[in-house]
Length: 110
Image 1 (cartoon, rainbow, N blue to C red):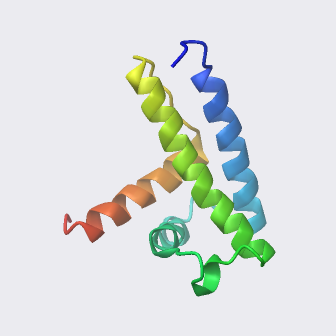
Image 2: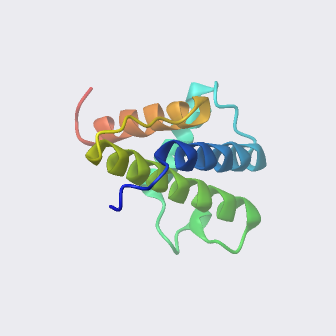
């Protein structure tokens, strides 16, 4: 790391893109059931699987959202490695909470 990254700005840009993908997908980030379903899809998505082909605009938006989630995690990790606390907004927090809950469920943790 060069030390010149603006992690906060990067997180805000990613958050904006997450919100945009949410609009395209019709996601209400306050609907925990729907966001949790999205988290399940993120874990189950494999290129070549039925809802994970980028040839459909909705599926492409979903795939891009999953990529944005990975990118946000990377930015947060890099910022933490540099001693900087970085966080996303409401959409990211809803998605991250659902992703962690799905992860824990798949790991056998209640």
